[in-house]
Length: 373
Image (cartoon, rainbow, N blue to C red; front, side, top):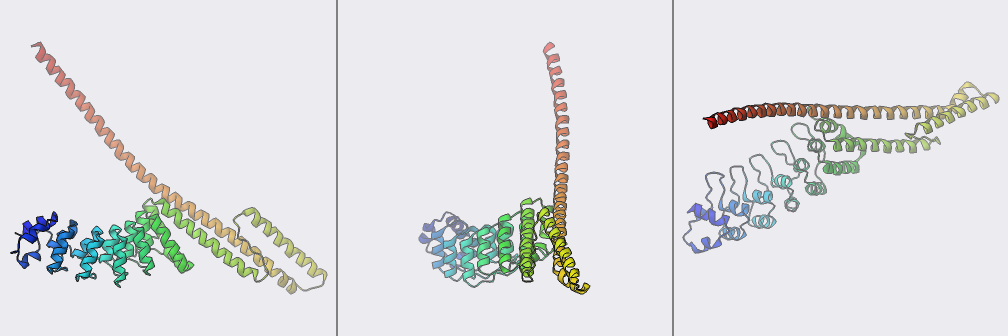
């Protein structure tokens, strides 16, 4: 009888339930032997709304778990069935239950990109920071699968963008592993709104293997992520330079961190001229060496700062080129490995072709002999 009811639920054949008044209540909560699904699980899975409503009216248990620890509301989150989700919630479904991998309804909604269900889940006051068996929060799950709408909802609900998993991977690490550049952009903007230090920390902190997000992106050949990280760090560095400019202006010293070497050289010469003029005028007025040093100090400091900025910029360029060289080296090695595989495949095809030709010649010889006889 239970198999008949399961078949009816899969087809959403409500007549089977209405016409069989002798259905025992125990059958309504029975679980099958394979998946430990109840009739309610099957109704949600196969979008059988009529059977679902009938089962709920007959007060079935809405919180029985399958072999994977899924209740019917977990199935609704996986399939993105919003109407089913609401009906189960209104009929006593426990939205806080975890499956066998310690995943919440929020994790499952993020895995499959069902943002509406995630929104309902969070409005019930559920925790955004619960970690599954990998140490992943819902946000980790979202960035790994590239479900951008879900990530935006989690950020709106103040999820922890600095959370790390059991391997020390941040959300940005997972973006770089899977090449989710759109999620990476959102996280960088969010971190930047919190503070420059937060952004730099997320971009440069290593995981438990000592790998920074950029290293992970290079390793997985996700060059879009590599470029975004490097451009973001460069942008932050330039902004930091502008803040230094404003501080120096207060001391009536003009400081320019331009990347234009000709402009920097011009400023350097201008500074040296001012120092020499200062020394000349001070000597003519009979001032002491101490006065000379005091007058020249702002210009000397300016020259040192500009030279330091130039050196730092050159170091950044060198590091960037080194990263690209490493990226190209890894890609070349992978391409060479693929070429080796293709060479082996071609050799095998040639051997097979040669063998077939020999076989055809032999068969043709037999056919001629047979024809002659």
